[in-house]
Length: 265
Image 1: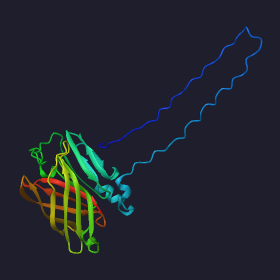
Image 2: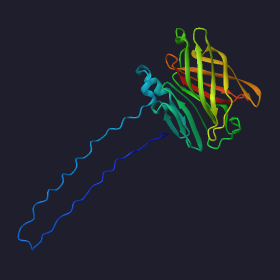
Image 3: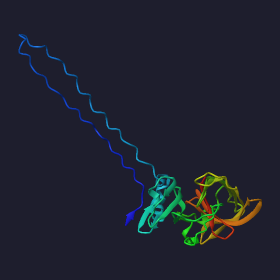
Image 4: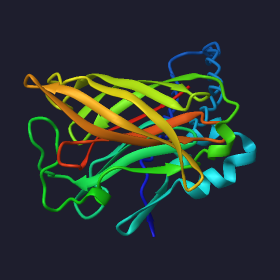
């Protein structure tokens, strides 16, 4: 299968210099003194380029094989593994069959979407395209946190990003593991191309719960849009063996994925 990857190939071109010769003068009775030729400069030492750091480099060695398995991504006629990609944004405008992929990659997890390149969205960034279903939108991959493993964790604050089909912003998420509650905000949100400001989204106090033994959370979000308070659900999961990361999604007023968020302690 064709592997989807952005590879930068660099090469070093060495220039070779030629040398010229001299002639003789028959009118002279004495030979010309020898001219010392300059010593050719020694070749420059080879400078080794550092190997680009991948998100897997920040994963505990005991969990690397599992993370590699969990972060394998299948696309139409293609596959890639986010474990071997750098931490941060992953964006591919043509991921096969006229699709675009956009994701945010963390050491233990990644969250992103695969949508048509010409996906239809409204002025608020909501997807309004009949070709797209909820399962085509945001998805979370990686090593999930077991619910039983958060019992003795201290309170934590996660910082990261938020993003949608046509939006990007920042995330701040606070967690009280002892009392099993969460809350946060998605702020400094703008559209991708024209950087138009978008409303801040407040993640109201939600609850930590077990979903198939996975440490998960859920609650209600609200935003003021054109002077109207809009309330919609949000949900997500803790990622990593000790809840090092968090990923989640806010739904829109139609119940479809709208804004994802991801971050780490």
